[in-house]
Length: 289
Image 1 (cartoon, one colour):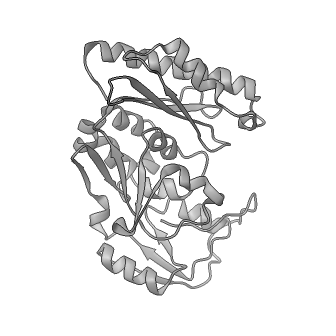
Image 2: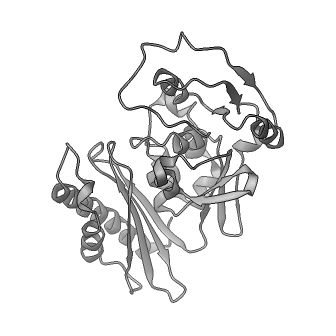
């Protein structure tokens, strides 16, 4: 699911004039990696909902590797306090998967809220991440959860934030797995009511001493997510205090043509307070993820 850097604003009329390319249809991860070792510039085709757009923007693969028959990339598991999500899991599969729903119920609920029905049945979590488009929401959800991206069946692991490092051009290899620690996770939620201007994903984790730690990702359709963190030093959440602390961390360059930095901080303060209030309400009854 590695993609090429895309041009800005130059969109072709269609993909009908594509140059010839060689298509591979491997059935195993091992075969896929063998193909990539011979063709390091190969482009991966997952659900193809984004690939078509990339082709219209100028992507012209010499070698295309379809992952549709690599069933191992659709696996999910939850073992030893770690949730594993295969890179070929579609939005619909992830939102309805019993393993995901049991491990992090609110992740499944948030996953169900994104994209259109047509996209949900074809687009994959790996494609959503590796496309590196600001408007895609899985980087926010998984970034707040502190997820790691596993490449080449474990040969390399990097945090979701690495998608934006150096423009993402240093990413190489096949994204095979996404991992999320759940052993210390006590709550997770997502607020997209102010999309496209501002969206916030937020996770609450418990430190070894019992105090709570909050990690959030705030983004929009026009900027990549900003990581916001707060070590509360307490065993209970104070939504007003923590939301103000998180919002204040947004840098001045979070502004864009839809709103100033001050306005975006205001929105993030409101959205994080809403999420933290919901977390408090659920945590009073039971530990809910």
